[in-house]
Length: 194
Image (cartoon, rainbow, N blue to C red; front, side):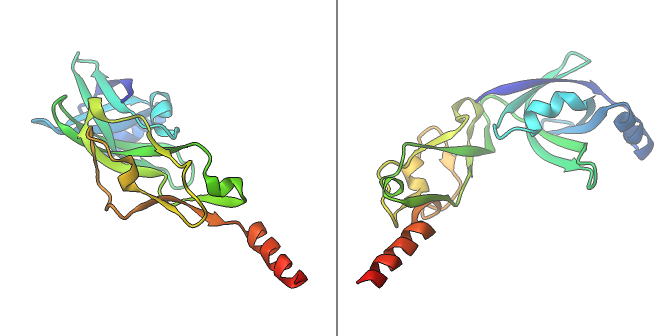
C-alpha cells in the first residue's frame, strides 16, 4: 500500500485558544493514538491535500519536529460545517507486524456481457473494509466483471485474497448488471407491435 509523508510539529498546549490560533495560522490540530502515549501535533493544512481529497487510500508516515516518526492511518476527520476546511484529524499508530483495518476502493475490470447487450452495471459497494498488515493491503481491489450477464451479481467472495481479510459478509453484493430502462422500454414496444 502506498504511503504519504506528513511533517508535523508537536504541540504543548491543547486548549481551545491554542487550537484556534493554530487554525488561524493555516495549521490543522491532530492527535496520534496508539503506542504508549497520545501525541498532540499540528501540520500545515496543505500537507493533507493528497490524503483527504482523493479517492485513493494511503497509510501515513508522520515525521515530527523532535525527530520521531510513526506509521499511521487516518482514523477520523472533522470539517467545518460551512467552509469545509479541516478542523481536526485523528491518526492511529501501527507497527509493521500489526494488522490494520482500511476502506479500500473497488475498481472493476472488463466489460460485462450483459452491458454489451444493453444492460447497466450498478455498484452496491464502491469501497470494501478489509483487515491485514499494511504491506499486504492493496491500493485498490480489482473485480473482474466480464462474465456477468443481465441479472447476475458479483459477490465479495469473488475478490477474496489470502493477503487480507474482507470484513463484509460473503453474500454482500459488490455490483450487478441490471436491465436498462431503454432496453425494457424497447421490449415493451416490441410487445405492442405484435
